[in-house]
Length: 417
Image (cartoon, rainbow, N blue to C red):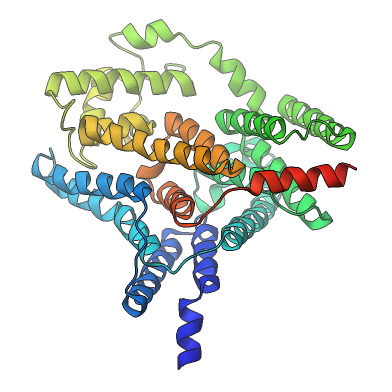
C-alpha cells in the first residue's frame, strides 16, 4: 500500500499526467477533460497527504480571471450562457489549484513533459499528413494538404495546432539532445508547421529561432550556419508551393480604411485574416460604447449575440455569425471589461517576469508565441488553447528554472570545438 502511495505521489507520475494532458489536446475533448480531472484529483490527494502548498505570485492572474468570470454572472447579458461559459473555463480554477497542491517538480520533469509533448505532436503530424495525402490521392483537392484541411479529420483549428507545433519545434531545436531521432522529430514538426500554413505562427517561429540563436550565440558555428541555410532554403521552397504565398499576397490587397468606415458590406466581400479581425475590433468598440460596457463587459460567454447583431447590421455573410472576436485581448475586454483585459496582460507580465528572473530561453519563446496568437485568436477562451496555455504557464510558475540557457551555451561551445 505504501508503495502505491509513493507511486501516486511521485513527481514522475505527475509528469506523465501533465504530458498525457498535453498530448490528448488534438483528440476529442473528452480525453483532455478526463485527464484534467485525474490530474486535479491526484494533486488534491497529494495535498491531503502532505498538507503543503507552495504559493507563487503567478497564480494570481488565472485565479483572478476566474473570480472575475464568476462575478460577471451578476451583470451578464445572458446568465444561462455565462453559466455554460463558466463551466467551460473551470480549468482556470482546477489547473492552478493542481499545481498549487502538487509535490515539488524538478526541472528534469519540465523538460521530459515538453519533450514527450513534442514527440506526441510529431506522431500526430505523421498521422494527419498520411490521412491528408490519402484524401488528396482520392479527390485531387490540394486544400486537403494544407491549413484547416490538413487537420480536418479531427475537426481541429489549424492555428491552434500550429501554436502547439511551434512551441514543440522550438523546444526540440534548442533543448533536445542531438540525435538522429530528435532531428527527425524536429524535421517532421517543421514540415507540419509549414503545411499548416498559419502566417502568424510561421513568422513568429522563425523570429523566435533567430532570437534564440542570437542570444545563445549559436550563429558562430559553421555547421549551424549551414543547417540554418538549408532550413531557410527549405522554408522558401515550401512557401512558394504552399498556400502561404497566396494568403500573404491577399493581405496586401486589404483595404483597411474601407473596413473601418464602410456602413454596409455585401455578402461576398473579399475578407482577409487581417480585415475580418479589424472589423471585429471595430464592432467591439461600437458595442462597448453603445452599451457602456467598457468597465464591466457583457459577462463571460455573453458577447456572441451582440457580435451577431452587429454583423447582421453590416450585412456580413451569415457564416461569420459563429465567429467570436478572434482576439484574446478584445474577447476578454468585451466579456469581462477593462479588468479582464488587465488580467490577460498580467498573464503575459508573469511570463515576462519568469524569463527575466531565470533567463530560461523557452519562457521567452512561450511569451512571444502566446502574445502573438492572442492577437489572432481567443486562444485561452477555447478548451484546447486554454489547457495548452495553463499547463505550460503552471509549470513555469511551479518548477524552479534557470541556468539552462547558460548550460546549453557551454554544451554548444564544447560541441563546436
